[in-house]
Length: 358
Image (cartoon, rainbow, N blue to C red; front, side, top):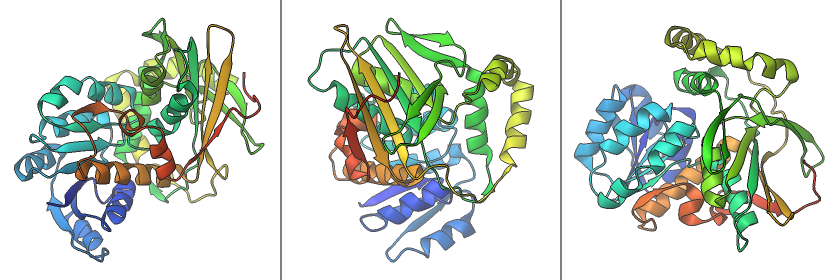
């Protein structure tokens, strides 16, 4: 059976992943709107199936009955959707998601032993958000002792798709702000202020970007990839200005209240995203590692649109798992297939250029 299920198939990433997979497999389009699913299926030159499901729980029940080889979950927030989908996987069915929320990435990786017992290959962070920075870390740390500390910075370029922000992305944003900051110290996750560890990076193309600490799934992936006891993850999407960082503790406290957080999610979901040019020509992922002997290494990954990189990553993962190239357990993308997966998805590495960040 050559079917690959795509949950949330009519969303932006779901549509693009399904279109890419249609050349090598039979995409099974899962979503709430039968008419939209059928219209999408009609755009493919080959066969495609439609599975309407009014909720994640209903999609999980359909998945359990069908037992496909691979399912790709594009429905966020993944902290909410991943547990239901993974719990429904029949023995031998494999799973890919696009998560970059720290609780979702860490939660799936904690299922490694259960995945081995169920003959599942579970891959989380199947996109730019995790693969970009973790692959640079793995390149920097290859054949080297465990570094003393590591920092990763995500600097994405995404071409906007006009329309509403939507409830899934709104929930991910609000939940991320409400969670506050985290970093690794002495091998343990510790609380810190959201937006700590600001930096001004000079990118290899000569442009600049400001980043600040944010507790994404990249933090967990970088620590696992390096083994470093001290790890910071930062992003250009995080508020990095002095004034913004000053008010973040109050914002975190407010959004952590269920009533205020719920209201913020509903309002944010209705925000209209404008069609405007991207802020920079490339997507970048940056990592720097320091060793106890005083040496350090720095590297970059360069890609085009971060969404296109995510689509290529998720589709490649699904194709490889469908072909039997995975192994039972729970993994981030580069932990399973190595950092060269990023090259397959359209990126290139620039390792150890002139030092540009401190």
